[in-house]
Image (cartoon, rainbow over all chains, first blue to last red; front, side, top):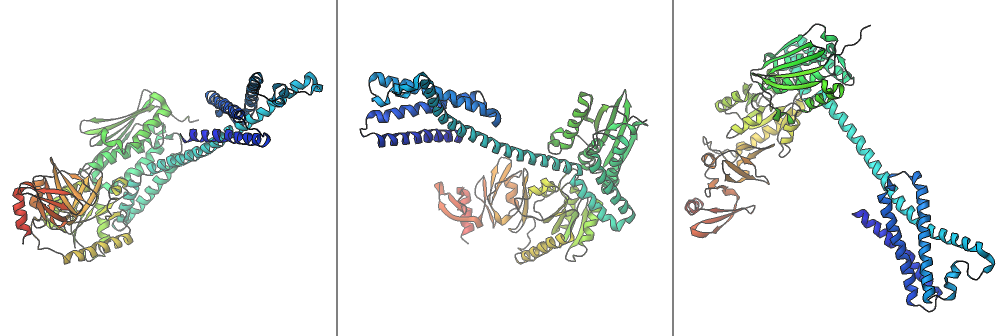
Length: 367
Length: 241
């Protein structure tokens, strides 16, 4: 709305400016001021404004503003000349009508426009004069175009700058969120707290826990960037993670891992199993007072990799809205990597929860 | 001060206990690994202070507090938990982040212990079962939590099975019955104005005569509550000491 408002302010003040000085010039030149002195420039510039307003409609409709400046220059030139010609045509008609009505003084008549009494210029002079008049009028429209397009190009580049900055900020935010999700601060601080308590109770276990925590951190940061990792690499992370959770939950957490032989050389997206195991503990085992068992089962069936995580507890899809980011990301990742050949589903089976992952079997070619 | 530590992780309890060793004013009377255990222990020991974890199996620390009629002082001890911390943006209340920084603990304890001394001066004769004006209750409505002293509550309004509690600029709704509440409130402080309202007498600004021999009370914040005819007799008796 404000933009439209601005447009009209420019239009009216621009043409109004010309009108004002046109009238001023007339007053200074003419001793006898008639209604014609007012009427002529008023009609003249109103038509000018109507023409440019129509031109604007044309520009918007043809979406000329979407092009870059260089491509627009010839169009602007051509547009100005066309408008200048039309305007001049109108001028001629206006003066001709006045001639017919006999309103014009001799020095203002149409014949003067095209060379007047200076016969010595000959036929060539009519063409030359016409061209000069058209160029004169075109300059007016060229200035209009420069203001109109100039404003839009300036506005657009400013808008693009804003968008670029917003985009950069959103990228930064996404990266930060990813990192935060990977590091899982809730887990980190709880682990540190347990480790602190271990300093006095069991210094040897404490040292081990610190090593596991640093391994976990390092591996999370490194593998997170890769497209796929070996299951054995992924399981190293999972095991460090589980060892730390075991310190925290003590006898409340039991872990069983059953991996088919040979599966360790298969490839999985990094941190996929880790994310799902973390979810299983966070929403499953940790929510059961007396604790529970977490089982990780990996097998190969018909060129497909089946990884299942079983945990005590109950899965409630409604409750996961807030923390379901990990699961959502994992599902998305599988979709990108494997299309409809990869899937994750979480089911309540009897009194435990099963997270089933199926992905195509891929192996590193060992030479 | 007698305190209870409530955390589902043994090591977390141990760590906190070792940090609290330096504070001789604090006597740890019990340790609980679940909210259920804690409720029994709180009844038994009637502690002055709780060190409370928020995320625990089955129930959260907030659930535990809601089940208590009156709450001891509470210091939340939690790991990184944006949601829990956000719940407290509405009123500054103490929480410690795991692993607990001993310096931060020192500040918190100084605050708790100084408040404890202030309270001593106002101690009403402990009346079993009845809450005094300095008692605080824990209120949770949706995502928001408040600890509020009874004296700051202007009135209670019955809404079906719920009670709306008016204090400061808030009006949270809690699952309680107005009748049950009335029994627990100090009759010198809170008055049952009619079927729907209990008002805090300290918040009464002025009183007008109303239809049918009833009264209308205007509270300091401008709320108007009608006192039914039957209650008006009691009210007059109470006020004309």
